Image (cartoon, rainbow, N blue to C red; front, side):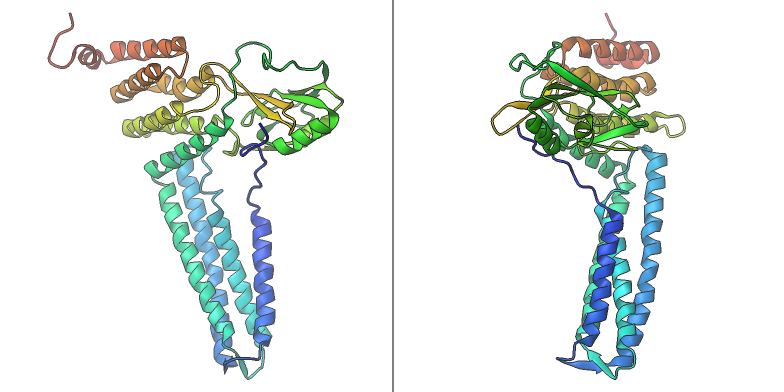
Amino acid sequence: MTPTAPWRRTNRLHAGRTQLLFTLTGLGLGLALPRVSVGPQLAARQVTDMLLGLGFGVLGVSGIIFSLLFLVVQWAHTTFTPRLTLFRQEPVVWRTFAFALALAVFCITAALTIGTRPSVSVSVPVLAGILLLILLTLLRSLQMHAFASIQIAPVLHEVTARGRAILEPLRPQEPESGPSPTKATVLPPLTSAVTWPASMTVLQQVDGERLLEAAQEANAVVVLHTIPGTTVHRGTRVADVHGGQLAPPAVLDALVTGVERTFEQDPLLAFQLLADIALRALSPAVNDPASAVHALDCLQDLLSAPGPGRETAGWLRITDPEGVVRVLMRLPDGEAFLRTSLDDIIAAANSPAVLLRLRGVLQYLRAGHTFRDEALTRRLAWVESELAERFPVVWSETVTGPGREAS
């Protein structure tokens, strides 16, 4: 396969560049528009007063934006999980701030440009009014996003949707369980190993197009040992180069790193977040089994969705236009998905409702034959033993039905 999304690098929102672009646009309009002399004219003094009042008033909008940001981030940190950064990374947050800044710069610059002129084009206040209406629309959208980001159902839905979107493109062509990357592809001899030269970081993305081009030029095959979402330490072996000579910087430059996991290419992040939310709901301080059950509903949806490495680990291949495999990456197996999703919740479950829902999830997955039966059977026996030992009445009614005695 050629690098399809998500293996094309995603250019993340650069808040500083967006704000600079919007500010320069507002400055340019503020300098140019008052000089327009054609068309209807208005008394300059009235327009100047309006622009100054609007410009300085809009500056207060930045306080509202950052207040919402701090509120939602703190709420998500304490209620859901510290790793949930959906609202902080929402483009509407920084675009609204950039637009408010641009409107303030436009109004103040236009007022200063008008100066002592007796009249000014009607286009100046008209544009200011249109920009104000757009800002109000953005503020309403920002508020709706903020409200959704502090409610359990929209957050779980958003995490599940993002997790589902990343799974389908990551599905390997054929699963492999052996030590060889593929039975159909014979790798050239190992040429070199690439290790991480810097301090600890998190691999966030792999620039598949860039890595493909480098491997094709060197007539090499790159086997990546680290998947997005993995913490990489100094000296970690991140890749092997087979065949041609490919300098380590050519491989390392295709790896996008940062301080935290992101959704772009991380196949396990959605599962981890849903498990974290369920664990927070099960903590003694919160004690909200219903939210944990809701999170398990979402986990069942993700675990049963098409995706990579259900029964065994698979290899994702990126090929050049001639169909030659140039990049290989090993994807997580079913055990990794189950371990990330369910094991901690089973260990922390302190509610019969949660244990019963866990049992239902495992039975559903076993009926769907999407995972190895032995992996599901071990966890199902674990859940049922917890039910039998800690909640014998519930277990008895589950096995025999209410109102009947176990034989």
